[in-house]
Figure 1: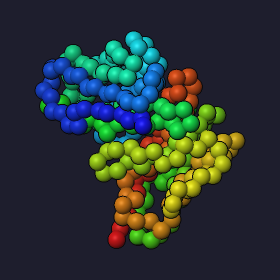
Figure 2: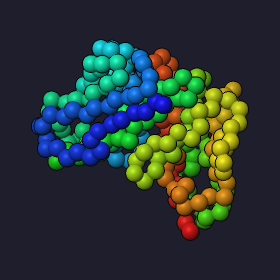
Figure 3: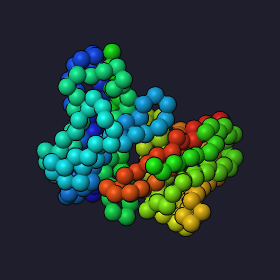
Length: 111
Length: 109
């Protein structure tokens, strides 16, 4: 069966420190992968998506970057975190006929 | 870009009551999903529904794509139904999912 894994679940990082969040999927090959952020309040904003290894599309200019070093691995990074990077980060993939499935998310607090 | 509007923004129900959540979208879309975000933040896929009606237990959804809206029905609500319900539409290339702002449902015992 297809599953999606995200870690860590929670993270507290100081301003100016680097960030690396990892997302992996199992049970499929060449999935479309997505990073979303949910800030305080409710709205979910698409940050990056990838249709294949090394292919990254950025939706919103910001302090973050994404990479896809392997088919089923998607990484969200920052060289220097800002307070405004705090939020709930969700990885997702799309399965034909079933739509999006989201990981359990990482709650990031920048202090 | 496309606008996705959900109503009402907040809803308080007594356990056992029924409710209807609405999602309007401003442009033609390829597909639509309803999600429930539980108190731990997990987004649970409820329905993947481009058109027509689907039912899953006490929940059902109807999408009328030609009129650009979708409805989520919750019958005989339970306290475990509490949380935020999101409508999201598939739009444009790359299968991008655009979210509404959600309806926060609180079911009281």
